[in-house]
Structure formats: structure tokens, C-alpha cells
Amino acid sequence: MSEKILNKDNWSEFVNNLASSQKVWVMAGEEAVEFVPLSEGVKEAEGVLNATVPPKNVVFPQTETLFRFLYGQKEVEDLPEEVEEMVVVGIRPCDARAMSIVDNLFSWDEDDTYYWDKREKTTLIGLACNEPEINCFCTSLEGSPASTEGLDVIMADLGDKYYLQGITDKGEKVLEGVSGQLSDASDADKKAFQENAASAEKKIKRSIDTTGIPEGLPQLWEHELWQEVSNGCLGCGTCTYLCPTCHCFDIQDELEGYNGRRCRIWDSCMFSEYTLHASGHNPRPTRRERTRNRINHKYNYFVEKFDKIACVGCGRCINQCPVNIDIINILSKVKEAL
Image 1 (cartoon, rainbow, N blue to C red):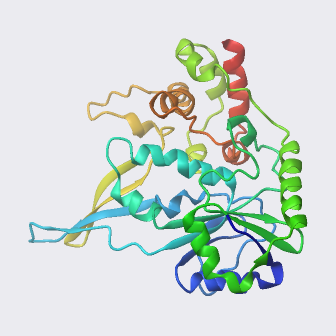
Image 2: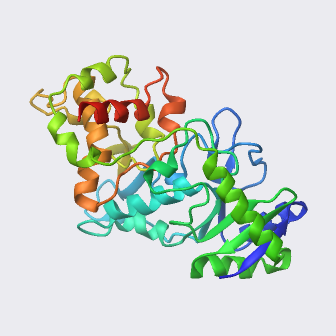
Image 3: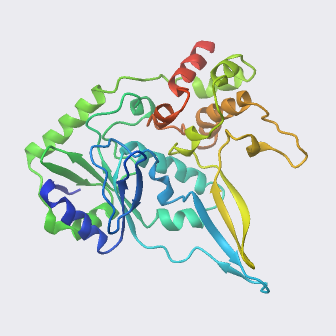
């Protein structure tokens, strides 16, 4: 396990060196920050704790072509094509944990090659949080501001420099490739990293004790709390689109002139069309049922199948909800009802 130091003056050279041998994803944007491929003209976001849109689109694109079909031909044009090596720079520990959680779904009954072709060629360089946001609650869900779960390299801001620690073989390989910009970390650097991590954990203001929630949710199936917490919901789907562990998708065939493609696109269980049958029947006809499903899926169904809660406490669904629906408040009401 190598421990290195990168002076901030060498940041651009460091990133460009990474990009010389692989596709690099960085946080960019102003009002809506997201991870995008590094290219000429892309300006990295500065002073932003986390991306508005989680980096799940690196391995699970919002719209993805599965194959194409051509006019007059019986054969299809198979995809995916060869996937290049990629590295995500600056992913937060909560989002890296989210990828490790979602891995379970895409390797459940059969490996999803579209997902795994990209996942296996992606290296995650994480950035530990020194100043968690007001709605962060990762410590309630087995995470922490400096968690290494799912990461290949953990990076920490030490003021005028970054501390980097290799975690996996992929991470060590990436650090070896940019060794010219790095120096060995001193004992003082290692201590500063540990102290910052402990300090950041103490700064987390919100929490929820999830003990008993997964087992207890089925008892509350017809409870009035679902109507109460869903009354203000607009059904916009923001909470699911911006959730790093939400993975629902739809598959559609689209025409492109005389040819066409089959693609999968992100979907949301908060949309009325999500469960609408061809007969016109909808087993989740109102936002009450859809809100109930969202919470049950994350805190009960996923736990039963994979023994993991499908939430990492990133706080995006709270921060971005246009009507201030708060998942911590919902879980608190669940605890009270139980």
C-alpha cells in the first residue's frame, strides 16, 4: 500500500498525465455539477463538495445503446464495442460505496456485460470529505467521510497538497503511471490524513439509527404515514435520478431513419407510468404507493436480497427535492411507527 503526496501546483500535470493513457472523468459545471470526460475546454469545478449528478453514469449511462438493427438485414449490430480504460478523479467515498452496492444487482442472476465491461475498466480515485454538507448522513449507513470501500485510491486535501493512498492493484498501477508528479508521504502527512478523517466524521450533524427498519417495514404496509410523507410529492423523479444507488431502467426500441436501435434509459419508480400495465391497471396508482415502494426498496427489498441497505447517506435527495421531502424525516417516522 503506497502513500504519496501530490503538490497542488502539479494538479494539472497530474490529471493530464492520467489522461495520456486512459479516459479521465472529472467534476465540471456550475449550477449543475456532474462528472464528464476531460477534454479541451472542460473546466473542473472548484470548491464543490460533491457533484449534483452522481458518477453512476460512468458505468451505467443515462441512455445506452444495446444493439442496432439495420433495414433489410436479419442480423443485428452487436454492442458494446471495446471499452477503453477509464479513471474517475475526485469521486466522493459515498458514491464509491454506492457503486459497490449496485454491483450486487448487475451480477445478481447473471453478469450484465454492458455494465461490467465498463466497471472492470474503471479506476476510482476518491476524495475524502473534510467538510461534510448539512444533509450528509453517511455514518448512519456504515460509511464515513474517508471510507475506502469501493475505491482504488483514496485522496485527501491537506491544504497545499494532496495525500494519496493506493488501495487496490488497479490503484497502485495508476499511481505508478504518474509517479513523476508524486513524492513519498511523511509520517506527518499520514497523521494529518487520519486527523482530518476523524474531524470530518465529528462534523456530520444528521443521523438516523436504521436498526429494526428493514425488518419492520413490512408491518407498516397500510400505515397512514405513507400518505402523510407523500402529500407534497410532485412525482418529478429527482430523488431517484440523483440517487447514486438507484438503478431502474426502461428498454425501448427507437427508429433512426430506416434503421433502429434498442436502448436502455434511466427510469424512476416515482413515475406513474413505471408500473402502468397494458390493460390500464396500475398497482401503484398514487404517490403514496410509489413513495412506499421507494423506501421499501432501499431499506427492505434490497436488504433481503443482498444484505445491504441501498442508500449511502449522500443527502442528494434531500438537497435537490423541490418540495423539501426529507428521507431522514421519513425514516424517523418509520421508527416512531414501529
